[in-house]
Length: 341
Image 1 (cartoon, rainbow, N blue to C red):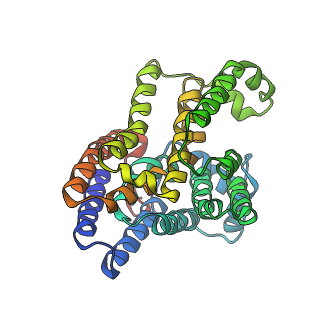
Image 2 (cartoon, helix red, strand yellow):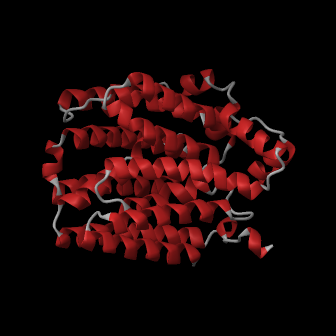
């Protein structure tokens, strides 16, 4: 229930921003909501599917995590900080970079933060903490990709890589088209993914020495409803395209919006071509690109009239609160704080 209650608070705050537009008061409210997200993830106890794996690593320093995460974990452990202090620090980095990125790339800020909360925040900041930090660094790197500053772009992607090795895939962003995708671009993209899908067995055999790849593609069992989940996931990601066509076609005349939209389209293709092979790989790899929906949606909401704002936000709210109610029903997400112990 706490997830739905917090979501309602975010939604009310988003409507206040719709009414007042961006000003000092809404900026302060946005900062307060970011602080809530830091504390909400940082003060939790025994929550998330990977809680015990991360907790045991922090307590015993046994495991095999990426250099950036492991060194920070070891430092906090050696300084005898409580585990939740470490969690607050990790989530502070993540939410700070996400918050700055939303503020830079979206004229509406609070509703995108709500979308992030219901989707990637609960998925990564509560479970896959390393990738939560990695994605926040790639979001921050996005500005340097758009401005064609490859050195700084590469630097922040490298920081992301230090927390989760999958972040290396985000380097592709720099080379994606910055103009409206034409038939030629689309055909090339389709052929690339068809080619990768065709050689998937040989590709995964070559990568089998990496235990994570082998686990997700061979060892891990797939859900009996994987096809249904695939269609639902694809439809949810395609919703943004419908919203653009129905409410905000003029946004496709904006150069920055087009570039971000192309990144998002790439993420959808990546999701659809890998999910059936491994749901975890499909979601984890595509997340670096599909998180762009928070920036796209924020700019769409800022460009339409109030009636359309309501229609779009209500449409997304159905999905948002469905996800929040779903998380509320998962045993490993039953919310407890350190103060409950």
